[in-house]
Length: 342
Image (tube, rainbow, N blue to C red; front, side):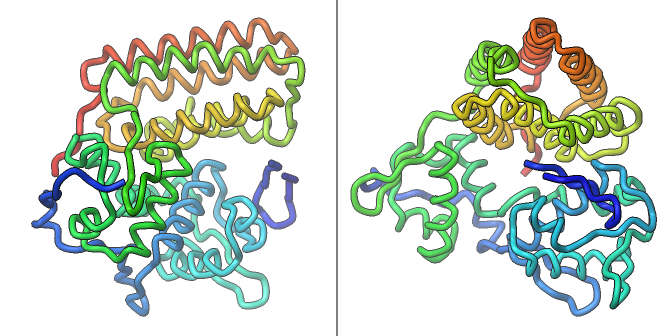
């Protein structure tokens, strides 16, 4: 992506089931698609609109945008990977919540520095994804859903229509942790659901990601490089204290996926993205100390320094050390699979 200064936003390039399920969610009632706003108009946001709101807030905070900076619809749509329509809804919603001001002729502008909206970020971080997707993921991690299920049982369990269920299952299928079986059945695949599996994921990453840094086709995008450095400097400075856990995780994922993309090897990039998708299901629910995030950001900056110096061997060595340290801290830190209260 290209950098745009005039608009105030720095953009980057870039079978059937075996048995009937008993619902563990009777207290929670049916599935609710989005977030209800208590602002002007009392609107319901769809899951897509909720995601776009969250990503706009996270982007502005990750980039440390200042009061008065312009948030352009077209560039936000490109950044998030969606059409301008949900972006427009999201910007109007954020204006109603007091984060943005709107000029009919010029568009939307930040009312205050993005980092000052910690409470708003926490609000949207409380629902980091489609609620149905998260409930299925949570139930799989807790072994409340068997490996082989059929759609009728899942529809009863989550009180949703077949079309709603299939949309979420299609997404999960793309991420690789469920496969279509005969008829209306689905088979769930292995995921990071134990300390052993978590450790295996780090062993795999330690073998894969340094290899990407040593690839003959490795090529740095300077705009993306500058953006990564800004983000990691922010986290190493004050962001580890002020950013939400989800914002910190997403910045971490972006760092690793961007370096994998620079390798020029599509299979390395796909593998890193796949691992990050599986890690989200675990890490969104973990109670984490913030100090390791500062340490990780400093290590990320050291890797970027080695890349800037064209020292691929040093960058790969630092990456391997970085991942080994994260493996020891998370797998043997005592609460790798601590879950939040239900």
